Image 1 (spheres, rainbow, N blue to C red):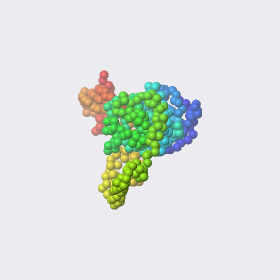
Image 2 (image 1 turned 180 degrees about the vertical axis):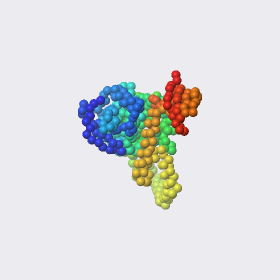
Image 3 (image 1 turned 45 degrees about the horizontal axis):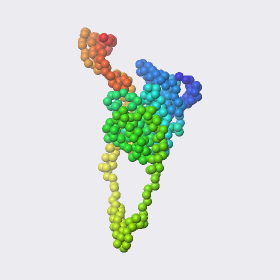
Image 4 (image 1 turned 60 degrees about the horizontal axis):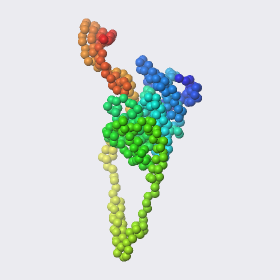
Length: 431
């Protein structure tokens, strides 16, 4: 761990952060405090996880797509995590849909190279922190997400349904591995190249399309993408993990991706063939007065039909009724990412809803670190008016390595009665 000099404090997207310079390498880091104060075993596990990750990543290239997270360190009674403060904007605050496709492909290279590095070291990148993916001058970058769930979540609107996109194998209880990483990487690639999520939403959820592999073709949003690149994007999002290419294979393919885009752009931008009445008349090459009469008659008939169609259409106007408008609002409100919609209302109301939703997610993630306890059996060993000795069978449900584990224990408990309440005074495990 290097030594740092802190020079300032700021607040962006509802997050208080500090600026600190590393005295060893001269780089400036962005530091954010933990969302909650950790105690006991939770604090020990957190620090151990950070130290292990730092040990496994001895050095990271300066132009990396996944930034090494430093810390935890203590500053002003805050426990901080930090990463290099590169210049960039959150990906979803100003989506780069106006960037040329070739430039968007180039900006993905640092991220692809980082995934190759992590996988070569036997490491898993993990579930991205979507609100901390940035677009900078040199490409896409994001801090290593392993410890980021301990930080407060920035106030930032995400595309509807994005937070529900997980590798399909996760739904069967399989742990996240390199193939799961490639799914998330494919999702980032699709988002950057098309500015849309790859799945149609059913009542606001992408789950059904995700599990069945029903992917919206990237060319529906971006015609410049050439077939080989589209095929790679679809493979990355395949429900079958074995169909997804490795980070090494994808990196080798990406070297040729720009050349294919250049060819595709020339094909898409090819000027369309122009037709004119004079050209049609000349190509028909009908000779004689009967030929001319046929051409004039057919042309006049189609011209009259066009006039009648335009006259009929001009009288039609669609006036949305109150029922239609209400159905549209209810349909939007039913979406699980309702705060992603800017419905007509006071902005502070939607901001409050977003903050409340984020707090519920944070609370749910924190609860996963605590075991769920179930009392299976209770046997009375000795009962007195003011105390009791019980033999209790317990079932523990623990969330470890991204899945639930169950174990059973038996304990001897001494209980003391205080007023109308019984309190546990002593617990002893029974082998």
